[in-house]
Structure formats: C-alpha cells, structure tokens
Length: 204
Image (cartoon, rainbow, N blue to C red; front, top):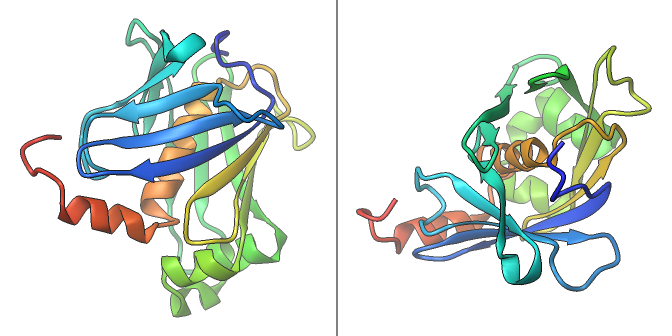
C-alpha cells in the first residue's frame, strides 16, 4: 500500500479540459482534496497521470494509467483488466504484486443491469449513468468479500465515485487505476468527448 495515500473511504471526481485531465480525491467528510491525479493532456491522451498528495500537492505518490499503477520510482505495482461478455457478468481482475488477483463482481440492481444483463445492450453509457448507479466489489480467497475493496459510480452524467477499502494491503494507486479504467471504457462521460474534440492533437 502507498503510505502517502492510505485512505479507507474516499470520493473521486473527474474534470476534463482541452489540455488537462484531473481527478480529485477527497477523504470522506473533508472539503479539501487529499490527492490529485492529473496529466497535462486531454482525456484521450497517452501519458500517465501523476498522483500527488500533501500540502498544495507537493508530494509525488506515484503514477497511474488506465491499466497499471507505479511507485514514484516507476516500479510497477500491478494491473487492472476488464472483459465484456455478452452473457453473464463482465469479467474484472485487479492484480496487485504481493497480494495476488482480486475478482470484481457487480452488486445491486443497477450494476447487474449494466454489467451482467442483456438489457445493457439497449442503453448507451450516458443514458445508463443518468439513471443507474453502478457498484463493483473486488475480493479473492486471500482478500475475502468482507475485505477487498468496492467502488460505486454514482447516478448522474458527471463522473463521481465513492470507494471503500476494507483490506489495508490494497494499494490505493492501483484502485485509482481501476477507476480510471472504468471511467474511460465503461462509464463514458459526455464531457470526455467534448474535451477531446477541442484538444490539441499534438499534446498527448
């Protein structure tokens, strides 16, 4: 676990611009953000996010992209993956070095419609986001259902996530990579598309 980002309950919100993408991490009940995940590129850019904590975000906690997380020294912490299925729930894996693989499964009616039902074919991401919240819980034999971690993508067009970490060994940077992956490939936000249209194609 990254010691500079040891929150057990936090929210994540996304902001998109022509030349930046920023996710702000707030500890539960706190007004000021505890961490910032940022890159100087539009949403479809390729460079990793830099995660910063501390006063005025002066401390580098590590780096994150849509598939992996890294220490400040660029050592890989693990990876996340997602495979969509036409029948049955989508397949999610969260593989952290030293902890093993956690499997993500949908919880609640909204998540199951979105990830584990043929009804999902009738809705695009924007419509689904507007009317249904989505919850995924990640666990494994080494990190059972009572532990692991879970996150909820709340109802609404603007992306907002709540995260609960029950196993202290789970690295929060890799959780942020999981949310970045989900936000990009599953729960599309129309602001992503707008920022991409107006972005500089040579700044990625």
